[in-house]
Length: 108
Image 1 (cartoon, rainbow, N blue to C red):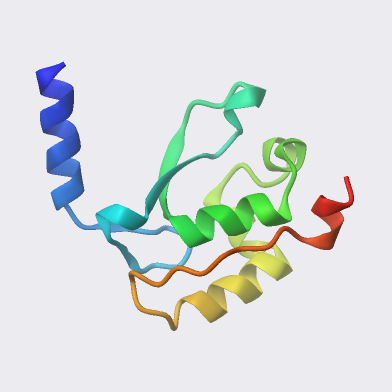
Image 2 (image 1 turned 135 degrees about the vertical axis):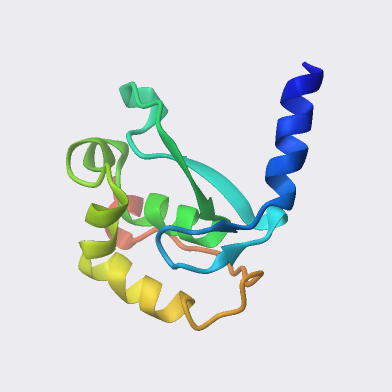
């Protein structure tokens, strides 16, 4: 257990870059995103900005993430996600704003 705590401490000190928006992620803004949702059997994760992670879940269902958007590249290519990323890239690394679910997702 002590080794896991040490690794977490080391990781929190290292600079981590969000693979979606290419900005550095401060430790307080890091979220681990399952590329394939955990509920769909996914295990692989990627560190993302909290705002980028929340935007993914505001736009896509878990089934869509599993079937169509299980890679960073696929997420970046989606038009709404691409528009969001162009906007957020201009913000400071520690920027955070509340994310609203899309009308399509809210209506489910």
